[in-house]
Image (cartoon, rainbow, N blue to C red; front, side):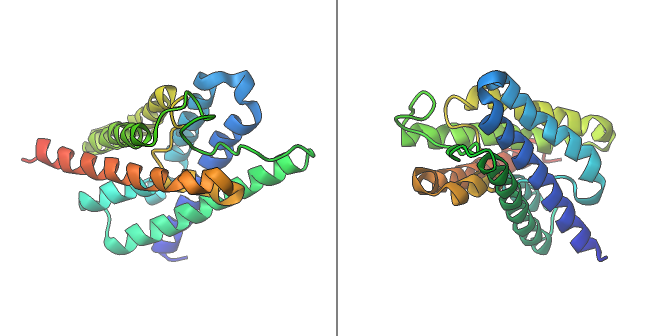
Length: 225
């Protein structure tokens, strides 16, 4: 198996796990877990995958992270496209399995952990504030990733730091937008649910990419030798 395919499959597996366990926790047990429990489900998914697939692909499992790594010249253009393709596929697969699990119970499939904003979602923030929130949350998340992975000596703790940071941004973001910071994680539930989730998903594709790009620019400026 070629090195590129190995990386792609690793990204597929990682994104599959993130969506199935993160979104699955929100969709099936959110009422029992609460926002902190859901946040930890997403964060622990990252911790587990960082140590499982990190040695193969770096465990981006997020197009926004891959964009920042490409901008910082830590990822080639070809690998960037490969990563995003497999991340989207992994997210769709994870959401499809989650959909099948919920559907098998006879219950209506209405959530899947989809992101959103406006009346009826979370505390009902506006479109503008949803964009601002996602840019800020993604900036914090990706900037932390760039910082902790910039020193080779941080390799043993990087996965833990990144996972806890994802949980950290979810604690604030869940009540606002559901917390995307990851276009692949947002696209998958929206495609399967359709309706409002699909109409609003452009925010959760564009804003995280903007936040990640800003993080890459700021990291380069502050860490220039």
